[in-house]
Length: 234
Image 1 (cartoon, helix red, strand yellow):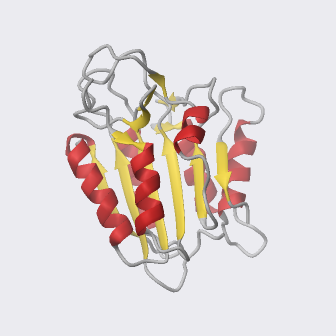
Image 2 (image 1 turned 90 degrees about the vertical axis):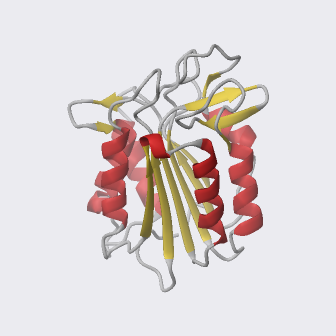
């Protein structure tokens, strides 16, 4: 499965939130902007839609996700940088207006959108850099739950059929770190470096598996976090 340019349309939805009312983050905006620029390069040729900060309400993100997978394309990519949250009711990408009643985008909804709307022969790539949440929701409400963990993602998305791939920032007992010196999340920084060529094969192509292998190798001696891969490995 290659990230390099295909023959049909390639669509990407790039989402980030730094500006949470409580527990703001620092580098997600730059992560998303640089990701969108890179994906739009001729080598990848994605048509990118970005949803940033205060624009990223639950309603708008749901609408954009539905529009993404309803559109005709051979490759879909969804990138999210922000808080993640897990409760006994679900696993959520936390939007800027999330609260105790509406915790964000349920990963089960994301799975259903992919399963029901994306063509079976298409490629779907999910990149989640969102294991950041603390002990309260972004509006400060105390809710029963924990920061999103890899095992929570595994429960929410128990299987991915052929052509569907998920790369997440870290394992269940780890955090996804920001690096204010580089202005990026550490995970996303390595994703970008890999896509800029560090993960390319002998022919100069970047595959999804090759990208994961590169990113994982960068963390191998740090002890910080271990990225998670689910789905195809071709």
